[in-house]
Image 1 (tube, rainbow, N blue to C red):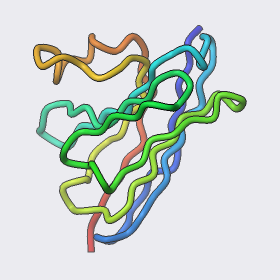
Image 2: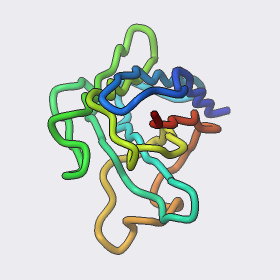
Image 3: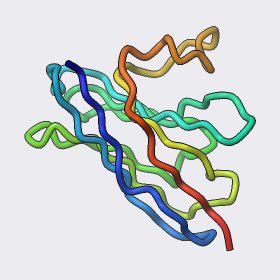
Amino acid sequence: EVQLVESGGGLVQPGGSLTLSCAAGGFTFSSSIMSWVRQAPEKELEWVSSINGDGSVPNYADSVKGRFTISRDNAKNTLYLKLNNLKTEDTAMYYCARGGRPPASYAADRRWWTAWGQGTQVTVSS
Protein backbone atom coordinates (compact mmCIF):
# COMPACT_ATOMS: atom_id res chain seq x y z
CA GLU A 1 0.00 0.00 0.00
CA VAL A 2 1.34 3.40 -1.02
CA GLN A 3 1.74 5.78 1.92
CA LEU A 4 2.70 9.45 1.97
CA VAL A 5 2.76 11.25 5.31
CA GLU A 6 3.49 14.98 5.45
CA SER A 7 4.68 16.92 8.48
CA GLY A 8 6.27 20.23 9.37
CA GLY A 9 3.49 22.70 8.71
CA GLY A 10 2.52 25.43 11.13
CA LEU A 11 1.90 29.10 11.76
CA VAL A 12 4.67 31.45 10.72
CA GLN A 13 5.03 35.20 10.28
CA PRO A 14 5.59 36.77 6.86
CA GLY A 15 9.24 36.47 5.93
CA GLY A 16 9.65 33.35 8.02
CA SER A 17 10.67 29.83 7.07
CA LEU A 18 9.43 26.28 7.41
CA THR A 19 10.60 22.88 6.26
CA LEU A 20 8.01 20.32 5.21
CA SER A 21 8.74 16.59 5.14
CA CYS A 22 6.98 13.71 3.43
CA ALA A 23 7.71 10.13 4.51
CA ALA A 24 7.00 7.68 1.71
CA GLY A 25 6.37 3.95 1.71
CA GLY A 26 4.88 1.11 -0.30
CA PHE A 27 6.57 1.92 -3.62
CA THR A 28 10.02 2.43 -5.10
CA PHE A 29 10.59 5.97 -3.90
CA SER A 30 14.01 6.43 -5.51
CA SER A 31 12.65 5.91 -9.02
CA SER A 32 9.57 8.09 -8.57
CA ILE A 33 9.21 11.71 -9.59
CA MET A 34 7.66 13.50 -6.61
CA SER A 35 5.82 16.78 -6.24
CA TRP A 36 4.52 19.24 -3.72
CA VAL A 37 1.07 20.59 -4.47
CA ARG A 38 -0.93 23.13 -2.46
CA GLN A 39 -4.50 24.30 -2.12
CA ALA A 40 -5.56 27.51 -0.48
CA PRO A 41 -9.10 27.95 0.84
CA GLU A 42 -11.59 28.44 -2.00
CA LYS A 43 -8.82 28.29 -4.60
CA GLU A 44 -7.82 25.71 -7.16
CA LEU A 45 -5.10 23.17 -6.63
CA GLU A 46 -1.67 24.59 -7.48
CA TRP A 47 1.41 22.60 -8.39
CA VAL A 48 4.38 23.98 -6.44
CA SER A 49 7.46 21.90 -7.22
CA SER A 50 8.70 18.55 -8.54
CA ILE A 51 11.94 16.63 -8.35
CA ASN A 52 13.19 13.64 -10.31
CA GLY A 53 14.21 10.32 -8.84
CA ASP A 54 17.84 11.07 -8.08
CA GLY A 55 17.17 14.63 -6.99
CA SER A 56 19.20 16.23 -9.76
CA VAL A 57 16.38 18.08 -11.54
CA PRO A 58 14.07 20.26 -9.47
CA ASN A 59 11.28 22.32 -11.00
CA TYR A 60 9.32 25.18 -9.44
CA ALA A 61 6.20 27.20 -10.09
CA ASP A 62 6.98 30.84 -10.84
CA SER A 63 5.13 31.86 -7.68
CA VAL A 64 7.70 30.12 -5.44
CA LYS A 65 10.88 30.14 -7.54
CA GLY A 66 13.78 31.54 -5.56
CA ARG A 67 11.99 31.11 -2.23
CA PHE A 68 11.25 27.37 -1.99
CA THR A 69 13.68 24.47 -2.33
CA ILE A 70 12.66 20.88 -2.99
CA SER A 71 14.97 18.00 -2.09
CA ARG A 72 14.86 14.33 -1.27
CA ASP A 73 16.75 11.70 0.72
CA ASN A 74 16.26 8.36 -1.01
CA ALA A 75 18.02 6.49 1.80
CA LYS A 76 15.28 7.71 4.13
CA ASN A 77 12.44 7.61 1.58
CA THR A 78 11.71 11.22 2.42
CA LEU A 79 10.81 14.28 0.36
CA TYR A 80 11.38 17.81 1.64
CA LEU A 81 10.28 21.33 0.84
CA LYS A 82 12.11 24.26 2.41
CA LEU A 83 9.94 27.37 2.40
CA ASN A 84 11.78 30.69 2.82
CA ASN A 85 10.60 34.29 2.77
CA LEU A 86 7.02 33.16 3.24
CA LYS A 87 4.18 35.41 2.13
CA THR A 88 0.55 35.49 3.24
CA GLU A 89 -0.42 34.13 -0.16
CA ASP A 90 1.56 30.96 0.60
CA THR A 91 -1.09 30.01 3.16
CA ALA A 92 -2.49 26.66 2.05
CA MET A 93 -2.67 22.96 2.70
CA TYR A 94 0.48 21.42 1.28
CA TYR A 95 0.40 17.92 -0.14
CA CYS A 96 3.09 15.50 -1.14
CA ALA A 97 2.17 13.65 -4.33
CA ARG A 98 3.63 10.95 -6.51
CA GLY A 99 4.10 12.26 -10.03
CA GLY A 100 5.66 15.20 -11.79
CA ARG A 101 4.72 18.60 -13.10
CA PRO A 102 1.31 18.48 -14.76
CA PRO A 103 0.54 19.70 -18.27
CA ALA A 104 -1.67 22.75 -18.49
CA SER A 105 -4.78 20.63 -19.03
CA TYR A 106 -4.21 18.89 -15.68
CA ALA A 107 -2.90 21.88 -13.76
CA ALA A 108 -5.64 21.75 -11.13
CA ASP A 109 -6.63 18.10 -11.48
CA ARG A 110 -5.81 15.76 -8.59
CA ARG A 111 -6.00 12.79 -10.96
CA TRP A 112 -2.66 13.72 -12.53
CA TRP A 113 -0.85 12.42 -9.46
CA THR A 114 -1.12 8.72 -8.54
CA ALA A 115 -0.85 9.04 -4.77
CA TRP A 116 -1.40 11.78 -2.17
CA GLY A 117 -0.68 12.37 1.47
CA GLN A 118 -3.16 13.81 3.94
CA GLY A 119 -1.55 17.25 3.78
CA THR A 120 0.07 19.63 6.24
CA GLN A 121 -1.27 23.13 6.87
CA VAL A 122 0.94 26.18 6.37
CA THR A 123 -0.44 29.46 7.65
CA VAL A 124 1.45 32.70 7.09
CA SER A 125 0.11 35.52 9.22
CA SER A 126 1.31 38.33 11.43
